[in-house]
Amino acid sequence: MDLEPTEDQQAVRSAFSRFFADRCPISVVRAAEPLGFAPDLWRRLAALGAPGMALPERAGGGGATRLELTLLLHEAGRVLAPVPLSGHLAASRLLVDTPWSAEVAAGTLIAAPALRPTVDGLARLLPGGAVADVVVALDEDELVAVRGEPPLTAPVNHAASPLADRWVRADRGGRIVLADGADAGRRFAALRREWQLYMAATLAGLAERALELAVAYTLEREQFGRPIGAFQAVQQGLADLVGPLDGIRLLTAKAAWCADEGDPAEAARLAVMAFLAATDVARTTTCRAVHFHGGYGVTLEYDVQLYFRRARGWPLVLGDPDEEYRRLADDLFGAEGGN
Image (cartoon, rainbow, N blue to C red):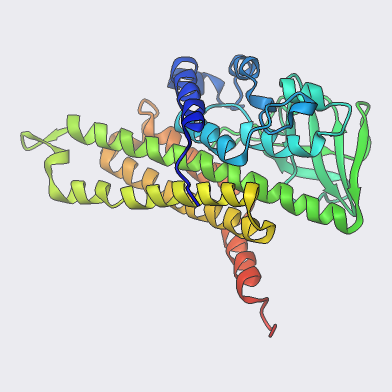
């Protein structure tokens, strides 16, 4: 298993790195708050074909592998791109045989996944739900896709995410049953794992950039006539982050490779592991970055606080991470009380 990007995959990563550096400076992120969505950036991504990369070519998409998608999302995470890419790419795979697939691939329709089953037909706090035109949700024993007008408003949240509750049982735009019974449950679980994989890649990019911000600040901030980065305690605090950052990048790549080429059950476990590890490393990295910024780290003028808030808010859309740890433990070792 070779997890290093191929020459073509390196080209994909470089192209999106240049795109985000040019089209998504931090001013775009700030301007997109509080909703957390930049329509112009989404249109520019659509012009590049990014929203359709997860779909096969027969549906008007790019036919990208999951490993290639994680490279895209890594670059999006580095700049905190205010577009719902992780959710859209995860949900779009389930819309391939619907009448909306071409529009989803083109990015003229935004898709959002419900990460928990509905309650009385209401899907709660969908990532991207505030701006999505199509919602994919598990409603009782049916996996459904529902088209409707996005509310374009979100509850106040520290991560400035376009979250929203969406009804899925009646909508003027249309409702399609994608699967029912046991198959609906399996496909919903796969959707959830897909989102976790893509969020892991996004958080890895976020953490990487947060470390760069911390290093840059410690080289310019002086105390006692020397840059604070010259002090051994600061150096150790930053150096300790490099290994975990490489670890989550490799774990995410392994999960993506396994989803494309390997055993589905192992791929599901690896996606959860990558998500949990990336969540932990992103929190630790941004916490330390804020710490080394001192008082400036909690002021709105400094960019590091934007990374700190998103490192905490984005993963919580799925719910309490401790629940995911318990589910993973049950999957690996058997549920409590089992043999």
